[in-house]
Length: 335
Image (cartoon, rainbow, N blue to C red; front, side):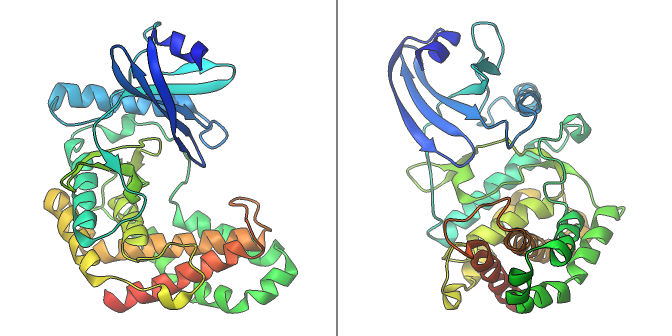
């Protein structure tokens, strides 16, 4: 750790591991000149860390020029004036620490409203940034057509026993194939725009203050050109149900209507005026799109012997798929 601290010329008073995430490690570093967030970039997941670094700097420069008061996680330069540091084959970046806290679990409708408004504000603030300048950090991340093709391939070439055991789930997901057709029509429509999109809008990726107000979007590794359905859809998938995708008791997989209303109000308060009538007509589709895609991905991985997500117990990805199928059914009931 001392070797990486020296790269930033920090006189460190204390540091601690803030989060041992599945993707990146995050540290809080207290120095004589202030507090910083130091984070690794997992280049097994993100094959091109330089693309992430480029995107964050591009956005930071745009905001400094157009709205310097917008609260943003600007990157800190090392002693060489660079914002990406490579040491012993590990990629690091640092930010000034912003006072606030991240939630691990969404607790109420107000938090859904606040988070949705903040993610929408992020896109709104960058509405005039040429989105084609952004680099792709994860190719085909939210490509529903590709995910369905991978699912179809797994039905043909996956584990025979698991395919047989998953017949009902497979049949249900096949019956919803019109959602793929809708996606393909949506992205080609003349009134649909690609914008600066976060792509990972779970509740832990926005900071809150002590008054339970969302103040800042964080974790920008997946920021790329994208469609609003990705951000809204991910919020639908992760905000509207009180239990997570790991819940085995499907009776507990329900939708909280007040959270759905709060999410819509929050997002549209900032982005409503920027969405076309055609896009607005597909606001509810966002939830279907993302929940369905995640169900496909979980079941695909189950059929392919947990090659992507892995599993802590036999059939975990199958349970996750059933959970998301149930969530999709419940969501379809309220829209």
